[in-house]
Image 1 (cartoon, rainbow, N blue to C red):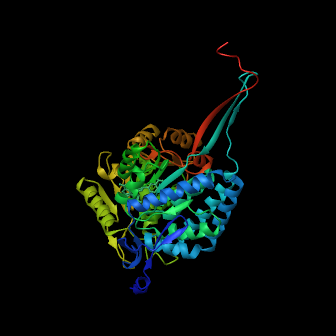
Image 2: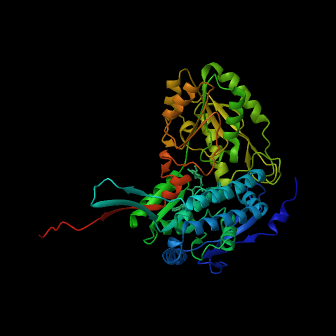
Image 3: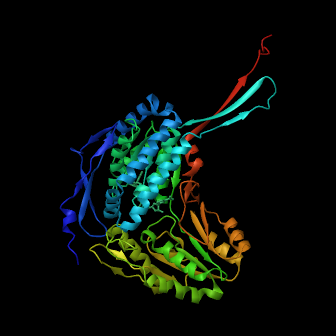
Length: 495
Ligand code: NAD
């Protein structure tokens, strides 16, 4: 095996960023990040305190009140365009850190960083297209206006699995709306969010608009969720932690946006292009090693083609390149932490104990020092099994079969989650008929896990509330104000 110790000789000591100033983190405890793909320490972050959150919120409040909330949309847009240019200019560096901290393949990191730049460009145009309503039908004496204004200071809490693209699905829309931000990235993957502070400063974003407070959820995240001067929390992460954030947000009844977990169906009909579908299901299972909120973790396939389809899927999976995440040819990378590796493996054991048939996978490999799991397929799965119900968040797919479209819909909807769903069929009535019945925020027909900044995303049921991206993703961070304007002289109440 290659020697990865040189990664360790350059452990990056991250500071944190408040009110346009870097703090080196002295006096704070630190957390070291081990590269999941290589098993060596690569970076460390300062574990900030609730007092640091107070300072960041105060800076964000000042920036919002004094500058950013009233900056014209055109100017906000220009800064977002420069931010996109800054991201593209540092693509290789950012992708490198994304791969070292998450364990994902470098080709995927590059695509995500480039995709992030795209989001800043899209939001730049939206910044100058914020509109409202007029009501001109009250008669001569009254005109009505509905205006939108930025909600204020937004607390943003992000997960480890897509650090920079999840940020990009929220931050440019928040900035386009005119809000200021206190960000707490995952303590495991803070580096790209911190590099971005430099890029935004270079793009001309006024100080205090983007603040990054690093640290743990129970300290920094909890302090933000409770904070009396944060107007909205946008949380992306697990459903269990989302519930905690919602409870804490009661302190000042702040608005809460939640983007949470999923247990997403891939419904394959016999009349689909089965080769395309097998490729899509393989991708939906292996993308980010299954550590993906919209991972296609439940295959629901028409019984008449179930065996032949499974054979195609297993053949595809046997050719997925698992390897060093820094190798440009690698398609599937590492599992994020040893604890999470154990959790996934415990589901593999549980599936077998529950009587499901392990068709392939379920074993660990270590091509470059970290912990990786081979794509895993369980068939003979019934709806009550834990592997069919709980978010495993790893490269594990369950196979269930159906006879009719109605049965496929029933199985697909039998989950507490509602994040995403894919349908594979060449019959337009079947495909659209089924997709219309899905209770999920992101749906795909004859494809999976694609999309850009134009369309909104979010969850039904326990997958969350609110929407990110698109114009809806800008309006999510705005308050609506109704104004009635009397025209002409008043008819007096006291005559
Ligand atoms: P997580 O819930 O463990 O952590 C998410 C963030 O919350 C981290 O920054 C963490 O430090 C913070 N946090 C932890 N405890 C907290 C607390 N008490 N108060 C406030 N913040 C706290 O999730 P994760 O392991 O980082 O990410 C995986 C989960 O995220 C999966 O469930 C996945 O489905 C979900 N996810 C959802 C989306 C989406 O768009 N719906 C996108 C990516 C990930």
